Image 1: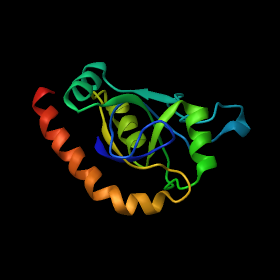
Image 2: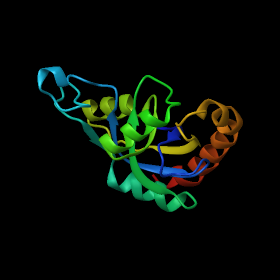
Image 3: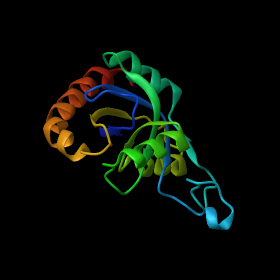
Image 4: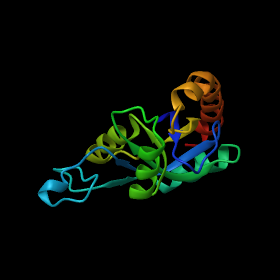
Amino acid sequence: NTGIAGGVGKLKPLSALSVSRVCQHDSDTTALGDPIGLISGLNMVYFDADKEIVEVIKNGAENASVGIVATGDTFIADSNKAKAIANTFGAVACDMECGAVAQVCHILGVKFGALKVISDSAEDGAELSYNELAETACKINSSTLLKVISQL
């Protein structure tokens, strides 16, 4: 999986991220006694990326960080929500698709990896920085992906 993501307090915009694990920050069946983020039916909160893919992306991307992405169906542009996602899940970024891809890969037994470039802070006003930086973040992502894809 490749694309852009909102940073949740630890990564600067336009920095690269090799995703180590993914979770769904908006999956909430805690009323049934489940932990927050649990994917019912799979009985998992986190989906790990393939370690080899994580390393290839980390080594091929300039100054890439490694960390957790929390996926949800909402564009996060709220400092309190961003902090809650970071604190609850140990996430360094949030997006809207990586978790679904990781789940499908897990179900099908396919190796999973992801490269994200931070497009915004996911805090108050994130929509403004997203609009300014999304195109540049996508260009960084695609050039990085072209560097590392032949190594996978």
